[in-house]
Image (tube, rainbow, N blue to C red):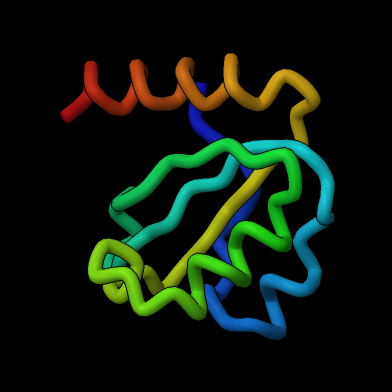
Length: 87
């Protein structure tokens, strides 16, 4: 089951509304196609670091959606497997 939260703009102002707790997030391109799925113990901090990293894989990201999850590594694996089945 994909993340059901609505997409947010991948901008610092929106990222600061993401809880700094454990969970998973997806980054989306202009068409809201998923370009990254990642779990983190501190989502907000990780997203801010990614946003400011200049990493080529993140430069196309315009949207983000997330869900809080204590067992974020397991949820990350589930999302990656589901994504790979569809694509």
